[in-house]
Length: 452
Image 1 (cartoon, rainbow, N blue to C red):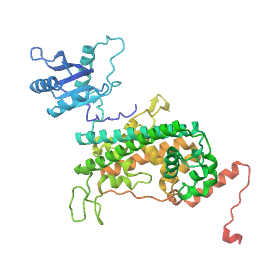
Image 2: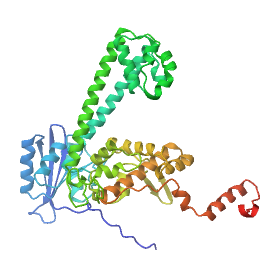
Image 3: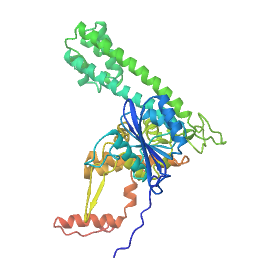
Image 4: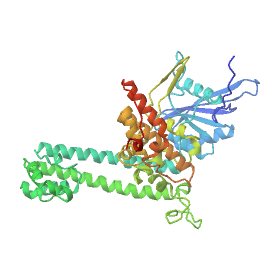
């Protein structure tokens, strides 16, 4: 017989005596409490009632739950409707956990009502069968609102640049075929001149700046179109909208920096032990600010570092290991094992505001002469670019975990020759010999100095 293995319970896998669960809707929620029944030893007492989703009603509910010594309250994460319940109950001192709808799905074949769902959610809670969703602390939640709005505005600005490019195409202006993009200073100057009434292609081409001046002949030919007055009116509206979005994005970026500097866990420590906003940036600082530590990663900038902190927080004990952070971010495939068969499932969607950032860092690092760049190129040759980006993005998340878990940690690039120096000379020679022999060749090895 195979030796039994002991499986340790997770922190959330514990039996609760007094629990409450709320099936959340937009205007109200159905509350269920389950506590020991004093009149029937060994049995449970269940109570179910509806509560409106207003501050006063939820505050009254919090007082009621505290009066009955409820140990934990579980909420179903329905849209954003759970927030009023979570914020008020958490502020009242109750232990609140959020559970995904897929995790609390009722057993098939049973009636589907709000009351039965609330009772089922309470039963799962008291048996420790729910894995709580990650809800960051209040200061990170506030920061997250700013970073997510900034990301949305950046996407919106990109859409307006695309509209401007389509407008130029309709006006038979092919500047975007010569310039790298329409959001450069040279193209902006040409569009402003077109709006002002300039139609001379050579005069428009002379507005080019920097390296684009070498392509003035091509620009003059591309600018020879049919840009009419109504095109100028539309272009003005689009450019004004882009400028307004840019101003709002800059405003949000400044506010995000202030919020992060105000978080004690994100602050650095100077050489003399001083901490606070702005600390940790001087020479000899033992602890850098959190944004500066992440900014040292190849391909990661300040904006990406701020967004990462807003999405995963600064307390890595929530995830406990790098692998769990990677799994939560959906950057590793699922493992499915049955009998002797083991397969890999899809990674899943994950957090949409976090998912793209490690991939962008990986793509940027892939163009550098660094360890991450060499890792990307090695994998891309064998497995393709998409899997290479995914693998390097996972490595980036592991690096981020260690940098945030240990404030004194610093990113150190291993260098592009790391793999070559780790492989022994004999193993490399043997591998090449096997490949040649597989092609039907006889290999004789002669040292270079002996051959000379």
